[in-house]
Structures are given as C-alpha cells and as structure tokens.
Image 1: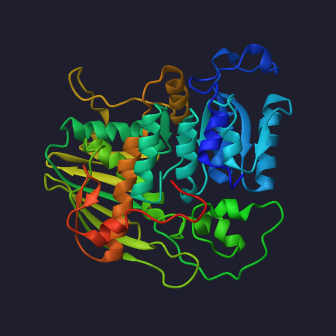
Image 2 (image 1 turned 120 degrees about the vertical axis):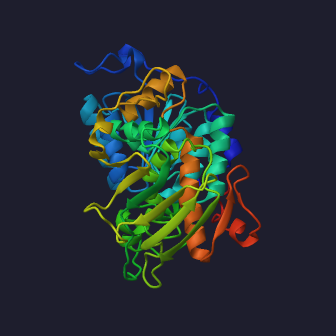
Length: 429
C-alpha cells in the first residue's frame, strides 16, 4: 500500500463517489435506531482520544462503515464500539487510510490523526469524492493548508473544521456584539490559551507489535520509536508533527477573533512576538509565547499563553474591549460590561452570524444539503495560518509583514521558505 500511487488509487476508487451515499432501510438491521433513509455513511481515520470522542458522537446519527488506525488495539476498540452500537459485526478496520478511502460506499470521512497526517488524507479524500470532517489544527504548514483548500474546492466537497466553538452560542453572541458595534469602537483584543510543555529525551525502544509506526510517521522525518513520541501529550508539542499549542489550542480562539473582526478570509498585516522554545527533550515547540498581531486598521490582538500577565484565573479566554464596553468569553462562560450586553437582541437588518447548535449535526445537514458548513476549510486555513506565521515570527525573532491575499511575507525570503516543509519519501503532495 505504501507504493500505491495516487493515480492508481483514484482510478480504483472513482466509481460511485460523486454524490452522497445513503444506505437503505434493509441494510441496518438493528431495531430502535433512527430512520435509516437519511443516514450518511462514514469512515473514521485516526481513533485516538479525539477520534474516539467523535466516533461516539456520530455512531448513532450516521452509519459508520469503517475505522482506520495504525494501532491495532485502537482499531479493534473502535470496531467494538460500532459493532456494539449496531448489534452486528459489519464495521471494517484498516491500518492504511487509503484502503478506507477506496470504498465507494463511504460518503464522509472523519480525520482525527496527529496534525502532520491531516494533509494527505484530506487531499486524497477530496479526490475520492468524500466529504470531510478534519480535526484542528488544519495543517502544520501554510503550504499544506493551501493545498488542502485547493483540493476541497476543486472537487466541490463539503468540509467541516474541528473548531467547534463556532457552534457555541456564547462565542457567537460575543462576535455579534462586536460585529454590530455594541462595544463601540474596538480598542483591543486579548486571547489566552494554555501553554506548551517540556520533556526529557526518552530512550528509543523496539516498535511494539500491532503498531504501524512507519505509517504513523507518514510525511514527518524519520525518528526512532519511543512510546512517548506517539502519545498525545508529547507529539502535540513536537515540531516535527505540529507547532504545539500555538496552533493546537490557539486556532480555537484565533478563529473566534477572526469571526468577530469580519476578517475570516484575511488576517493581520504585521506580527511580532517572543517564544520560549525548549532546547532539550522530545518536546521542542513553543512552551511559552507572547504575540502582537496588528490588523490593517491598526487594531492590536494580543495572543499569549496563560503563563503571561493573566488577570483571570483561567487558562483560556478572549476579551474584546471597546469604547462602550467589553465582553469576555470562554468555553462555558461569558461576561460583559455593562451586563445588559448579554441580553442584547439584534434587529432584522443587523449582522446575524451563522447559527449552528451542533458541530457534528451541522456537518451532516450540510452533507445532505450541499451548503457550506459553519467552519469551512478556507476559514479554517486562514485561522490556522495566523498561528503558523506567529510561530515563524517567534522563531525568527523579528517583526514580519504579512500579505494575506498572496499568503506570503513581504520582503522576507527566509520567512517565506518556512511556509512549507519537505515530506519524507515516498509521501508527496
């Protein structure tokens, strides 16, 4: 399978995937489940902690036909979840995502692999005619994100990014307050997210039975196996696979800021900041950081980890401060001054943002209707790009100018070379 070319793969998978596939009532068999006539078929790629949570959330609202994971134990565990839910043994398991994508009866895929293994499954899924849910952050480089956007657009696929705060009414209300001028002139935006971690350098070990470690590495550089490398608490802070919580957590709140500023397809024009990068150990992404992002109108957005000057006893939040008031929002909580802002209603001719009450439900609705989701790929890419270029600015240690239209730094060849990364053979875009 590693030697299967994209051309051969696509020619074998092309038949019957142009439109959503909805299974008939006779195919389900289990009593007491929702009507099958409008159930979308799904496959899951990556069944770690987040993938397992997504599987549990979709298994009853869609028809899960297959799961894929490089770890045999996780793969079997996911199969067991599906089989138990449906009362049969019909769920297939794969270790190579391309085998799952080759199935013409799978309409939509859910991708929850580590960040470095998002790009190729998304592109190949789009080419195979699948609609896509992909966990955040979208990609580990700007170039990868652009390639993903181009593929999804070229093949007219429905896409949902895993920035689920867009389906939270508190965040939507905060954005509508800003967009409708209820805070007056916006003066400052501050967002705080959890910082990264440091680690030791664990010794290498033999690859355990049941783990396809080469497939786990995918396009990332080869590295000796140790259990920590493939664990969420470590790879999430290792530069070969991500840029750490700068994007892993940061993209959630950056995405909300972009939404509030009506800048979802743009971004800042200047950025400058500092980061603390561990010099020893497995984890080498930024552990601490402080960024200043300046938009074209002069507005500054301060983006930092929670170890910085933090007036709130929380590790993640956003504060929009205007001439007439402020709103502070985080998961599960919203505050404002004056408090009446929380009861504010918006008129028929004011801005009413996309209203989704369920992120997963919104995906399935849009697969059926072919409407854009609340978190389409281009918006997810732009939000993630801000995180990625923040990391570049901190690594270079200087102010950078950014042209969001061309997705290039202005007059800085060194910074522009950092917008992409080489892929380990035989993987290529």
